[in-house]
Image (cartoon, rainbow, N blue to C red; front, side):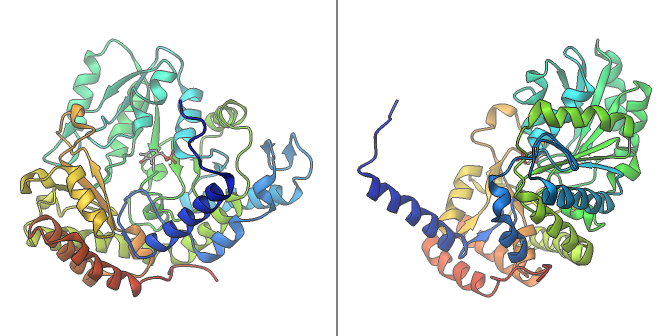
Amino acid sequence: MILKNYQNLETERRSIIQAVEANNTWRSSCINLIASENVMSPLAEKLYLSDFLHRYAEGEPFHRYYNGTKYIDLIESEVQGLMGDLLNAEYVDVRPISGTVANFAVFSSLAKPGDAMISLSTPSGGHISHNKYGAPTALGLKVYNYPFDVERMNIDVDKTRRELKLIDKRPKLFVLGASLFLFPHPVKEIKEIANEYNARLVYDAAHVLGLIAGGKFQAPLEEGADIITSSTHKTFPGPQGGIVATNRDDLFTTIKKGVFPRLTSNHHLHRIPSLGITAIEMMEFGKNYASQIVKNAKALGEACYELGIPVIAEELGFTESHQIAIDVSKIGLKGKEAADLCEEANVIINKNLLPGEPLKNVKDPNGVRIGVQEMTRFGMKESEMKTISGFLKRLWIDKENPTKVREDVVELRKNYSNVLFALK
Ligand SMILES: *Cc1c(COP(=O)(O)O)cnc(C)c1O
């Protein structure tokens, strides 16, 4: 244990401030292609720093366990309505402080220890909170994974139906949605199966919430999901946080208790106004924003593929979302190596397991995952995607010195420093 590895307090103070400033400067000259990140608009960012940073408001708007909440009551109930409109949901809870907390709250409300839950494995795209290292084990649930068809890059519905007959438990929860999420999931078909077991269907929209809000991905509740859980900061470019949305008042009553008091006390009030501003931005600009994201992702997939970069799912058009995935093992690299080379050139991506890859590869997988949502928010279009594919080729195939590539990355990024699709 290291308790006192610092020099003196003044040095430490300066070191913290300098690291923050250095990160700000560095990141503003990077092309960020992490699929789970985004930036807020200047207005949302401005409202993030407010007195609400210091406050509590346990309970629901207008029914709190604290005093001093009259303004957050107004804002939070307004934001529930805005998010509900975007997702076609009557009931919304914006109090989960992250997507993982939203999942915990929902799973713990709808299943009991010993129940079975069906989700995607990590290599097939499932999130940690869908699998045995996350929420299900903590809640005593038994996880079974959907069979995944690598050819179609999607859940094999017929095989799911057959395999479910062989397990000794009746599933209580079906979870859809993923972290590697290239194509819409078969919500309607899985809902039919869930109905046969009288089980609930949860759609985890963390990655694609902004695309859903913009009408450019599937509409989970209309297609049959009982509940949406999500983060609010991936394709949906809001503050980091979580959300639950549903039209089932019966389920919502228990889910709310899962959110508070079971999993939150303070719900980080300062993010709620920013979430509201982002919701309005999605109402005004979401369609254009989401459709440019999907166009950019397809364009990046196409351009990379043409340069000999092994993007997966070529026969399927690479993607219908904000992401593409690349099997860098086919060009003699590991995921980490490929991502580290990029980072030296100010291109930020992450290593990722690919569908069909064994879970034991998790620390050193064959793939990388790329998301174009943040650069789209900064105004990049198809032609910039082509330029980016050129950077990747120079780094990975031509083995050019990353510091050389970095000069061109920084130059390109200079022209894209303002957040578009944003309210003033
Ligand atoms: C990112 C993610 C989450 C978790 O979100 P946090 O807000 O980081 O807790 C949940 N589900 C999926 C599918 C995700 O990709």
